[in-house]
Image (cartoon, rainbow, N blue to C red; front, side):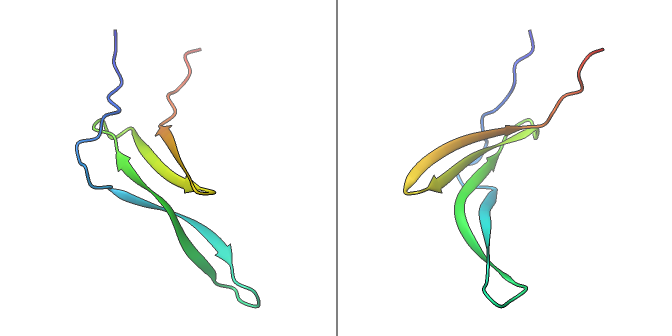
Length: 69
């Protein structure tokens, strides 16, 4: 049986998570930090901690694996 290593090896985030808010009358956008992310030990995913509407929302992102035919 194969296990998926989703544990992180660092207590410090390896990535920051942003949303882009368009500026009025400008081609530029404001980058607004909404959370942090930690890379999985197997390098195949991330644990995200997002702050949305004042709530902390955990999210796990994993690479897609090819489907067997």
